[in-house]
Length: 187
Image (cartoon, rainbow, N blue to C red; front, side, top):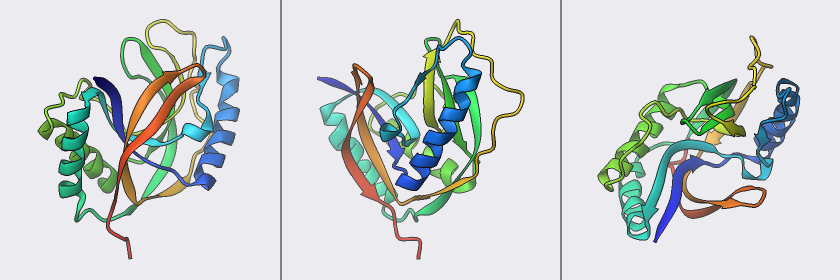
């Protein structure tokens, strides 16, 4: 049996509420009403998309991630931009983006290495860590990103990494945590 999975950071309620308000302001750029705006209850910061994996690989991923993350210290993530980009030929997203600081980049790369060690090939080497706010077709859509996006300036604590299963649902994807690995306390 195969499941779709990804590594992510969860977000505190205060950040989720602010991002939901921010997404509401972005609706004005969706002139042709093409964006499927994501339910804020499912907001998370995606670190590494794995695609379809087996249940055996879930066990491997957990063992490898626990080993590789045992000394990784929690850190502050700065979400400071909004972007529109094509993830694949079929999918484009509107997303809140972290500033690309050293810690988030290191964690992203570490989770890609864990996936590779578990025999999971990364499809998209240009993947960027992000919080998906809305999805739309990748090839042909009429979404016109603004010259200048509304300001984003949020801080969130990265204190654990979660492997989520993603199942398509009637009203968007349904995410189920498969395991969570706490990072070392910042203090």
